[in-house]
Length: 162
Image 1 (cartoon, helix red, strand yellow):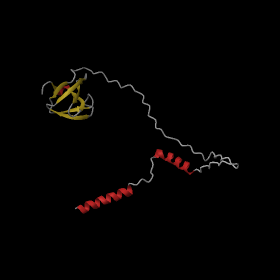
Image 2 (cartoon, rainbow, N blue to C red):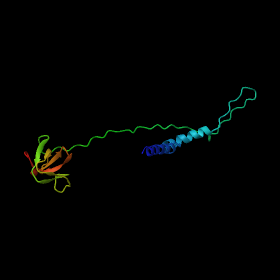
Image 3 (cartoon, helix red, strand yellow):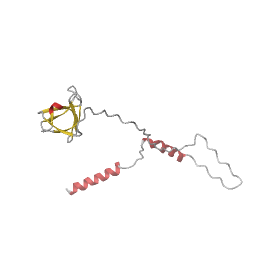
Image 4 (cartoon, rainbow, N blue to C red):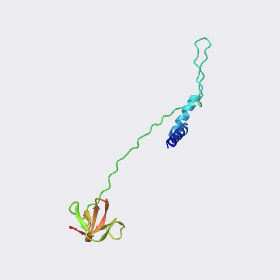
């Protein structure tokens, strides 16, 4: 068993030595800077003139051989504040966070205040819900705290006592 463990460790070590080697891969944004640096290093360096009578003026570099090194500095995006969307006024307000209990055996919780809206969940008899507000058509906006269920239910299936 110890031999297998040592063999596994040696295999991992060799793999990391071979595959973990940096072979000069660069991210896309750094490739241009590395290419410019490589070109700058490959340009011949002009010899400094010696003090003496036969001094020759250094050659003027051709403009095609001049390399301009550009540094990339990322800019932070400008964020402009946007006005928050207006929340519709609560129709037929109820006492804040009024707790009601489900009276039906299995009652649908819907995404909107109508039977035409989709079902987002079901509640059974005796479950407590928080009534956020009551719509004019008799539907209540409810919230089930433990499950995070949020939707609409008909007030016909809600009562003050379980």
